[in-house]
Image 1: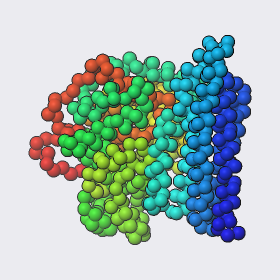
Image 2 (image 1 turned 30 degrees about the vertical axis):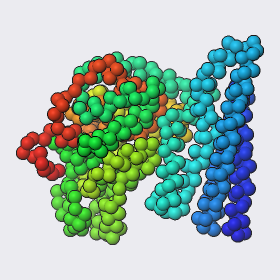
Image 3 (image 1 turned 30 degrees about the horizontal axis):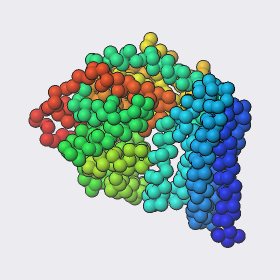
Image 4 (image 1 turned 90 degrees about the vertical axis):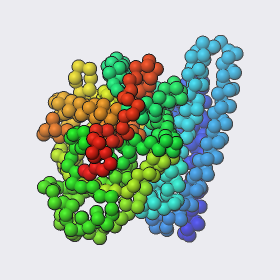
Length: 559
């Protein structure tokens, strides 16, 4: 069959798949409006099945593309996107029509009280329901499409792939990972989703008084007062974590443009960040050197002078100007022999990353974040290793890193990702450690978490609270030194040495998934501004990333 023939096959399969998805989504909305839970379950299942058909269409296109070339996939992608767009428009109109017709009907019959209870709740979330019933299907399909194209073309740096990811990933991330729209739809039919939300609410109520006390004893840097105060009055009452982070970055970008303030370097410039940590005598893995000149860095690697002070392997190359994980800019060097044997490839890697610019491609705050990172000059550093912990699941040594969220100088929770398992870790008021897990990415976006079962290898985190206590104390100490009302501090911990935790890095614009805790952390973030509990450092305090410097080394400093 010709290329055009294969494309037509995929197109013919894609149209019915899109039509089925629209029909099932609309029927599900109608069932919700008429309050028939049993029917709704069946129709939601059918809608999910039709989504599967759509995904299979794209996978089939990918398989065909491997034989007949990328053009087939692009042909099929265009056909599917067209179907999805038209279907979305039809569905949105249909859903609103259902809402209007049914609401008028119910207002004139004897079920006013029942409908008043159900309609008000549904009306307030109708935009979410529309997105959930069909939009999430489209988004998931688009994500599959983007990554299939990514794999087939061998990278993310072609204009087409960049455009696809930059266009579709931010709304997907915001709606599915941040707003948890799937969880809103699935919650009434999944007991675990409800249990996850109840545990999050109970933890928030337990911690809230502790954070109120911490805020009243915290001293805020003026830069964060300027960038975070709008979070209180400029965002709506039910603002999400992404809303708050986006607003802060917007103000940071504005301060850079209007006042030249570059305090954001404490996060966006890894070299400035590590200088701050070392200057303030915070524990970090050893830094072997820092370079602002590419040729000197490559020479130091080639001659092995970069490793003169090193006694342990692997050593990690990190680039000061690349802070997003999507840049894939960290490279492990297992041995000196590795450098010699792979010099051509290693040199190409360094040269490629040196000219690369940071791009928060998948985040809703991409433009503002890129405004900040655009002023950071290229640079590189070599970092020594941290002690690893053996994973019986992966059957190898792994880095145990707790990404600790700190508000007003007090740690709230930590996110851990090991063994392809996503977990949230909590330190209860009485000192107990609790860990909640998800088994898959789907569980995460559905907000389906469960407590670590007995016998799980992660139980050592709760059996010996010293590991988490070390991470909590170090994260809180660092946040107080920085003077940030909200910051994420990433801490390496070791199972063998519970008191030897070290800082890896920090983030003022975390894109982590906190499941049901995101909006609650925003409440804790805003509360002190509402009650005028905020105390500030002197207005002439040095920039955030330069705190702790003395007058004799203010103009120049090396790691």
